[in-house]
Length: 600
Image (cartoon, rainbow, N blue to C red; front, side, top):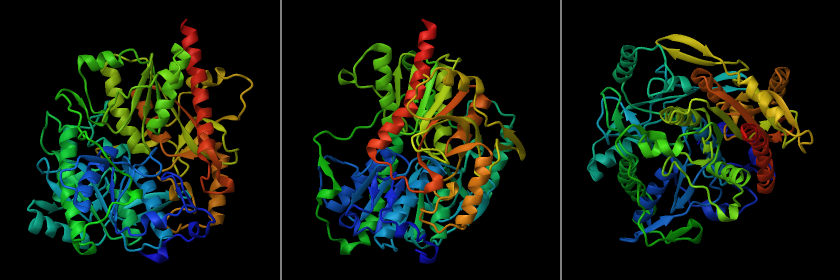
């Protein structure tokens, strides 16, 4: 790790809060993570679970045992596991969630002065000219323009990071696969979709575009000729981060389809997890071979291992019109389950989505949560969904790509069910600017980090600018539904959707040393304030542009966890976070109950 590029600011804080991990430096973190040599990142909780199980079998040498591992620390955003000398963590969908995860894991290791830990990213991907199950091992990532560049807007300025890193680990792993594991893994370049625009070429979307299939085929053919063999959504930021800090790293993509060939039957979730599980065995063997002279490890209490009699089973899905990100096939039973939805409330985590459903059940049906547990309708998927009457409460993860993945499949589901009069309302958290923590912001227009508005969509070389204004009529209705004596502040203004939690929001407490100083940050904040921008988050541009294209009414209600003009650290206690989150839900519930009463 390049110590000259490591940020020193967070190392000098009396307590550094790794907010999304639920860890802070007042804890005895050395007793848990002192022996870490490897970190394995994967997008989904389900993928992390099967990787953990394979590592535990290999490292702890427990043949034939049927058990599952429990994640440690906070589980609202990521699931973090420790098996021997390995951290395994689910980092979520897309570059934003990946950047948050890799920042906080890196900060954790820096606090422990662990500068030689190797990073691996493993997940499923779309292939180019490959077969199902083919393994691509890479140190080379390109963006949607087929450049080896990750661009990050920091303090309103675009900075570029190379996305090629040394191939030492990739070559070692390739050799191990060939010589010891007997599988045909191949080197190749990875095309990593960066935002909503990139996804148009690799997703079956719900929005009618004027792009022609021949143009898409040419683009993919050009990528193939450049050496691209897989397409994913996280590798660009992973590669840019690791290359900049000189972190030894490797990317493993397991291809589940071939974008150059027509496919009618999707690879189901249990098949994908089986592929991940099989390669996890190989990766565990590779690490095991290079650690502690092949000695088996003793099970430690903090590894939080828990034995179970029942084997971990995977959900089987029908091979019909399949919504991959929701793990749902559109069957008559599914249509009946979701028919009649009028309001969709989107929140970052499944915990918050479930909490809202419980509150709505009590208000709409008089059901006390003591006697009622909302049932997740998107079982074994990346997201969670709970229905109460004509309201659907869903989780969307973190960042633009995660939101877009959800919105595409969710909107396809709503269309299949005949739900055309829809409202999408995002309820979330944010960092405020010059307003009190705990204040609510109702967003009028979503801005990019460079203080521009609109989402750029590039198809066939033509650029189109899509409005990122939220629905003004809906905003007025939400305000009208609020009582006059709200015990907290409600602001109506604009919001910045950053590509990152740290540098993208002009913070000083990330793992990488910023290229800006305090004066630049303050100048940037003054420009932000002049545009009536009250807060920072990471999803509003993606959501607003999607809903404007799809002609769906949308609003965003976010609570501020801190005042960025007074610092960068999110030191909100769990009690304060619960109370603040309750405020944004209160605004949404006031509106939703007003709509219910208006129909009576």
